Image (cartoon, rainbow, N blue to C red; front, side):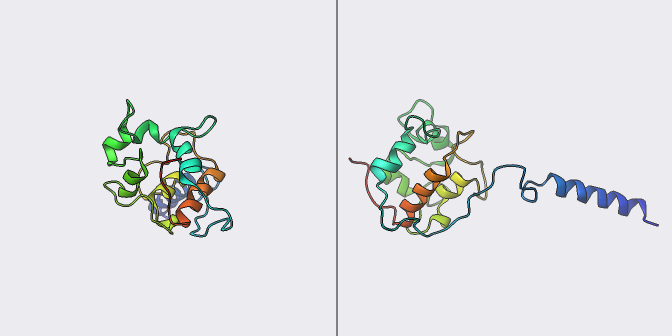
Length: 155
């Protein structure tokens, strides 16, 4: 016969497992598998014309990084909390108080990719509260980083 303590411990463990989104694929967002490979090495990603518009808030796109991480905007809570200034490519390259944001050639080690995918070791998925970047937009950022995170903000 099972003791009351064992039954209670078993029920507690079952409840924990059932509530854990990492173990139940129907709960929460599914993280896109990370790869340091460029998905299309024949086509280079241009920061100024492809990445910056998403960060600024291209029409029909995701919530812009600009809302929280540009010092020139009225609200910049992300900049204030983390020190991450994304307003220029130079400031993006400097990173945040947590360290580098885009590690050239290594999307999987890049905090910006972890935040866009919702796989960062701390904090919430970005953009905070969504709408989030599409898989295609995340892949574009990943490819740009895989290609060396080159370019500038000038058109």
